[in-house]
Image (cartoon, rainbow, N blue to C red; front, side):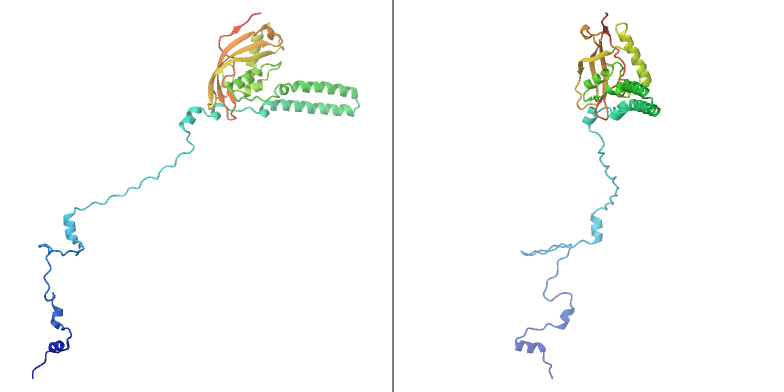
Length: 307
């Protein structure tokens, strides 16, 4: 008996033909063209078709490209922080010397009056103690006499305070010069103020190296200038004239020239007894005031007048 082919029934019903089962196990579909070899001629590409490039095998990439050595990593040093305290070039030119290095001790009211206040305070304390005992013994006339003499002595001891009631404001080098030599223009020159208006280098010289030596130096100079033209207790008047110097704004040290004229008090109409051209270096202190870097009489040629 003959076996019916199932494909005949499919054709009769109008259904699509079912492929044979053995076609599923073939390597290539029936009727398809073989793919072009990788190394052979490429097949023509239809318009609108695109292809993605396949990655080459590892052995082919290694053969075409030379090996690249790894780049060593180097630890870079961290950037240094900018020094905010470093002065600018203009600041170094304007202030070549630090104020703290040029001036050891600045002028102050306590440093100027301190020793005198101690002496006056001790004197008044002793005077009060004496008056207490005299009043207890009912020696009133003697107590009154002691009070008068003690008050006069306190005034004499307070003389350095009376002549320096005005503060030495030295915003310019010229003011510092006038205050320094003005302290000599008294019956009892105020050497302590002069000493406080000196910079570090002004307190050391071949003539003195301490405050006591400074006082002895100027006592001798004053007597030499007076000579026989004025008595021991006759004060001299020192005036700074002909000041010449650069502008001090923005500077910590300047060189100035001036003429120091010396008169005898009460005889100014006769003219100066000495006229001394001088030159001195000035330094600005931490208090923004000016100080002399020389505490001696100018060594320039002296032009004196004989009487």
